[in-house]
Every structure is written in C-alpha cells, then in structure tokens.
Image 1 (cartoon, rainbow, N blue to C red):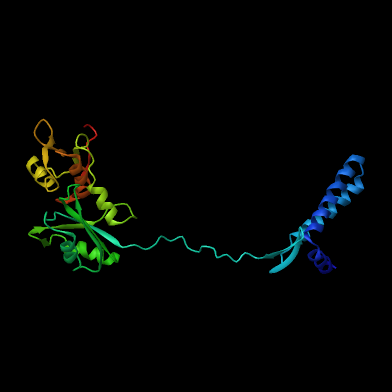
Image 2: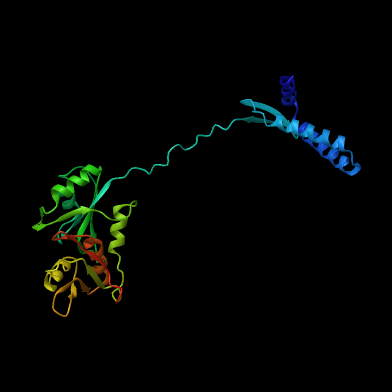
Length: 269
C-alpha cells in the first residue's frame, strides 16, 4: 500500500502539490474558526503524512511540470573538494656575508652544490647596491638542510658566507621579498637596535664589527654594571633605517659562542 501511495505522489505535478497544500491550509483555518477539533486533527494528520512522503528520497532523475514547463530534477554531481592541504612549495635558506660583487647567478652556481636551486636572489638597496645577503630556494627540504650543513662557512668571492634557514613567513615568492627588503624605510626613526643575550665577554668593538657587515654603524655600546661587568646586551645605531631593518632580518637568532642573540628595534629610542 505504501508503494502505491509513493507512486501516486511521484505522478503528481508540482502544481498539484501546491494546490493540495493550499487546501490543507484552508481546512486548518476553517477548523480553527468553527472549533471543529476532529476536522483540525484530520487535516494536521493528513498534512504530516504528505510531508513525510515528500521527504522520501527522490529517484536519480525525473521530470515534472511547473508553470506549463517541464523541469528536470536529479542529484547534484558537482565534485566536492576532498583536500585542504597547502600547495607544496620549495624550501628557502638565507645566505649572509656575501661579497658586494656577488650577483644572483654566482650565488645560484655556488648553492647548487647542495641540490636543485629553484630560485636565487641577492637583496639590494633601492639604488641597486647589494645588501650583502640573499635567499635561495631549493626543490626539497632535504636539499635545503644539506645546504645549511655543507655550505655554511664556505668561501664565495673571497668571503666566508653563512647559511641558515629562512625565517620569512611561509608563502610568497623570493622576488617579492627581495623587493620589499630593498624598499627604503625612512632615514629618521627606526635606526637604533637592541641586541640581547650577548656573551659576557663581548665588547663594543666586536659588536660594531659584527653589525657593520650589514651597513654603516654610527654607534655601538655594551650596557654595563657600575663595576664594569657586561649586562649581556648592547645598542647599535645605524646611519639609516634600511640597514637597521636588514640587520634584524639577517642577525636575529644568530649563534655567537653558543648563544642565540636577539636583535630588534630599541623601544627606548
């Protein structure tokens, strides 16, 4: 019997279903106005039964009439995304203490000793002068790790380079980062840096020598106690803000005598 009811329901047009719902609504309203409890109960029961029938699974496809036109109804076959994994990208390393004469091609030729170099860039100032550092992107994480292990402290154009993992946030291209790093950041504020977690025996001259590998250092100081002992941090002031920002990107987290130094803008400036 249930099968016959279902077949009958599928043979109804959508116009007929709409008309039947209108009749149900009118019957319910009439029952409420006259206080006919039996009629109201019967109407609600009938409507509930029809709704249950309408919620039955549709066949895979069918055609029905609507407003004088035949419509086609079937299941949605649109493919749904099955993975939210981020697209795979290469792995970058930061290369510092480059000779001012090193261009991207020389950097790439040197770094490809560790594996396949996808891209290489030497960071430059707005005037085109090298900033003495660059970024290299490898095809795999293993090759990047090999570059850090085998090419750190190797000689390129007469200088010992240092190689570490790139700390730039994931995503974006090397070329975009290089352009951003080259953009001038003003020459007034943001020139003074705080350098923390220094070895106790570090003096101002050693601190200055390290930071002038990035740019022109105007002043270097080591904070001391009244008895002359180092407090483990110092201040560096560059002649321009661009070099200060580059020092943060290049030297923050650098290991000196077993300690990782902290380099950031001096908040007291």
